[in-house]
Amino acid sequence: MTPEATFYLEKVRQCLSNARAILNIGLSNDAGRNAYLAAFHAAQVFIFTSTGKVAKTRSGLRSEFSRLAKEEPRIDKSFSSFLAHAYTLKEVADYEMGPGSDILLERSAAAIETATHVIDCIAGLIGEGS
Image (cartoon, rainbow, N blue to C red):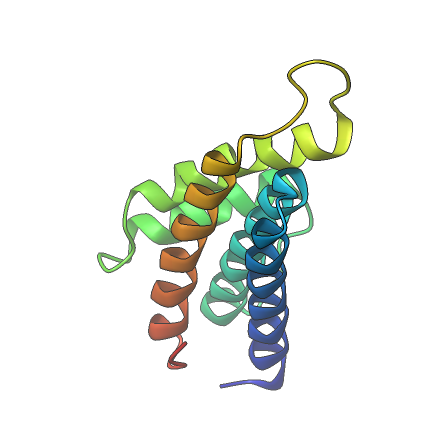
């Protein structure tokens, strides 16, 4: 595994660990954001190890990940849509205000669980157990 892939996986695990810790103290917005970031960086490491390139934008990452995931049968087809869904958590956490601007704890917990599956899958594909 390349040093760059190792660094990405360290970032992935840091974001996932932060998401879990933050959820445990009840900060659902921050937990949801970190779950998204963990999945985002996992997708980025998959793209990097597959193509040698880094996606420059969020939408570019989602498009390239979806394209590559279609060619890899071991990637659950729901992972691509999860990236879009989880990004809404980041949007709410970063930009929403007023009533209804808090992510439910259950929603953040579900995002962390799915992000964990994404990460485990990607780590296995690139030859790094989680």
